[in-house]
Amino acid sequence: MCKPRSIKAVCTRILAVLAVLGAVSCGGGGADSSGVGSGGTGITASDNLTVGSITGFGSVIVNDVRYSIDSITPQIQDTNALALGMTVQIRGQVDATGLEGTASSLISAAEVRGKITSLDKVALTLRVYDFPVDVDLGTIIAGADHFAQLAVGDEVQIHGLPSSGMLLATRIEKIAAPSAPILTGAVSGLDTGKTSFKLGGISVSYGKASLKGFGSLPLVNDTVVRVRASAAPVNNVLQASVVERWISVPETGTSGLAVTGPIENFTSVSQTFTVAGITIDASTAPLKADMVKKLANGSYVTIKGVYSAGVLTATEVKFLKDSATPPMPSYSLSGVVQTYLSVADFAVQGQRVDASSAVFSKGTAAKLAETPAPKVKVVGTRFVNGLLIADTVQF
Image (cartoon, helix red, strand yellow):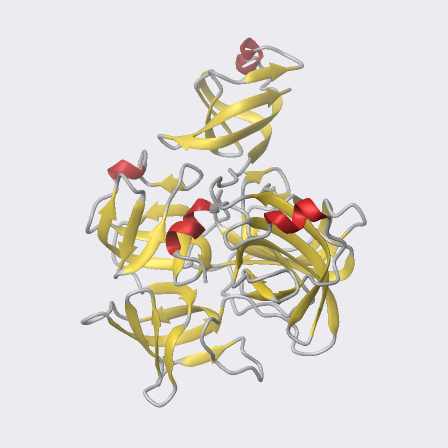
């Protein structure tokens, strides 16, 4: 497994898995069907599952796949509506371009909820009940102007991408009062006799918990799970009420699958390795020599292929970034300008935007203030004081 710091280096708002799959257990709640947009990876198949974080609004785009959700009611747990940075699981069809899809279901749930017990404002890390969470410039902070305003003792709810005993935060939201704890990560130190395992620095007792999403598969080390409990840990022991697989893949048959994330457990391209908890066989993939040299633990890749019997046999490998250069997310907002105060403070799809340093096309900054309000597409890569800093604005 990669060390937490190496995973931080490849942190991104993208982590996609597409596969034929039944929906993961998730409570219902309506969401605005005006949609959400983000980036991602798609493959052609009759039925796919995309798992990743929301990086924009204006139809649901996750991991570069733009999904229409007009015909569905999203199922949302732990909050009332979709928002930037939330992790979602979208089941649906993707076209031959791998960029457009039609969703048949969309579900979302938080990965971590609880009290901040430690926080490092320089390293951009925090712990919730001694469970480690990494933050970077792409992490959206809601309920506070920026990361520096978070403090030990704050109650937070976090969406993110779990890997190797930690969470890469995509959205952190301050909440007003304590709520039922949630932790999500890779199982380690499993003791079936004592019905316990570890998530980060927390011991989880699961003897009285309901197991969901496992089918006939056993609970084993390295399984990524979401744990829910009714009370905070005592002496770093959490009494679980529910343990569910964070993502499920087919137990039988074959399906198209694509996965994006950091490489782990890599020794050579002739040996299997893992990406996002999925076992990868790239030994027969059409790889050029320069690509083979780039593959290493911590390198960020997108892998497409056929999933069968627990292994993704790669037919395409796309190198994104090396372990030293984290790929930044690209957030997009498409819609009518709202609540215009200035070029440095207006909203699109409810998200505040600062376009004071943006490049404008098909119009100038002055057009933002026009009546009727213009429709724009805003693209940016970072947030400051709750505002998306726009790189480009297109009318």
